[in-house]
Amino acid sequence: MSSVTTARNGANGSPAAPPASQTSAPATGRPVAFPPLTGSDLVLGTVALSLATFMNVLDTSIANVSIPAIAGDLGVSPSQGTWVITSFAVANAISVPLTGWLTQRFGQVRLFTGSVLLFVIASWLCGLAPNIEMLIVFRVLQGLVAGPMIPLSQTLLLASYPAQKAGTAMAMWAMTVLVAPVAGPLLGGWITDNISWPWIFYINIPVGVIAAGLTWSIYHKRDPGPRRVPLDVIGLGLLIAFVGSMQIMIDKGKELDWFASGEIQLLAVISVVSFLFFLVWELTDRHPVVDLRLFARRNFLTGTLALSVAYGLFFGNVVLLPLWLQQYMGYTATWAGLATAPVGILAIILSPWVGKNVGRIDPRKLASIAFAGFGVVLFMRSHFNSQADFVTILIPTVLQGAAMAFFFIPLQAIVFSGLPPEKMPSAAGLSNFVRITAGAIGTSLFTTVWENRAILHHAQLAESINRGSIAATQTIGQLASGGQTAEQALASVNRMIDQQAYTMAVTDLFYLSAVLFFVLIGIIWLSHPKKGAGGAAAGGAH
Image 1: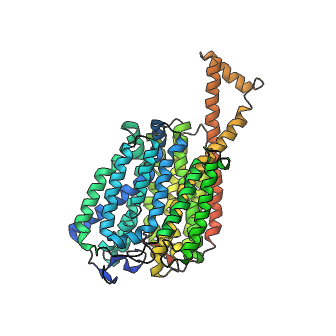
Image 2: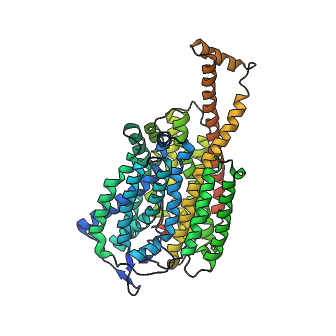
């Protein structure tokens, strides 16, 4: 979920600021305004941009319910299968701050169309991947080329409408973004169960080709063309080194016994050293890839911190729930999708109201509603047990949609509050980089802690399985009377213990997440957004 993002030295196309409907002339850099689209061009242009956005956002959720099937087919554990999600997210986070430079270097229409076509090719390669290593490589490629798509879709859409209809345009765009997470689990589950998991990637091919063709045919004359601008190559290299090594360390830590492994120690050193050099370089370079000085602003710091931690918690839970349902509750991918998809229903209904009122109501109050809502939902989930039925699991999912509606728009309003227009693109790029990275880290940490807590609970539960336990003796006796051998009966009991252990572990994480969401309410009130700050986020919430 990226927002409009361009680099610091090319304030080109930020919908958070008035010049959103303008582009930069190749020779002088002065803004060149294009008239709004009309008639069929406006309709087809909106459809094309919405299709591309839908395809991009869909790929952040469609694989969630397919992870067990992908892992099983490629011969890896489900926790290794989550690399399919984290690799995409990390690559996407790294490419987001480059959108501004790429836009100026190639032109926004050329870049958007090229990104969509490259995304189609990467999706095709993901479906063809013969093993987990190649799938991760192609997901990284997919994430890298996806970076500019959502920011530029916002920029082009806002430039297509008159200024007085900008709110309507972004409301339509937001609906696309909110529908995709609903469709993702449903579509992914159905495809996995009824066709095969590669088709969750192949379906991008016709959608992407249509979106790219329509976009180019309508917008290619509205592109001012490329111009040469400096790129912070060293800063970019350090960014890739520290984020990439940190994510690999988190993903592989549980397999390699963490810091008992020389490989993990090396990755930790690379991450820390490159991060320190990155800080020094970005604070002193004339054209930094990200403007770290923005963190000196209270609203940006507290807003980005709250948004990123909340997104890490949210995304970690989004990945964990279908894994638990499929591995230990007997759900198929389709039913796991049905249990997780309704999260978007209330979000779609309530988001227009939030967007309309965020400039009138203190965004801290709206964000507090979101955090309290997430906290209550996760507290409800912390009471799940291995006997929980479908309705019990579904109710918190539906309620979570209301919290989502109050989540992104108010927090973006706080992030952008008090920033001058020329800082908006840098702020959008940096806040989204931190947020997307937090989502990838959250996914890895949640799956790791889940397994560790399950091992602990399994050991504690297994201690009660002995000859002195009446319940254990009766259970083994019942299984034996049903025709199982002693070894088969013990194996069945072990599977029951596994189900209980992983269920207890997942509810531990639900409870911890609930507590942290309530803590975030206090953090968000450290900010002091200016009255009417919501207008700054109208084009950035995603």
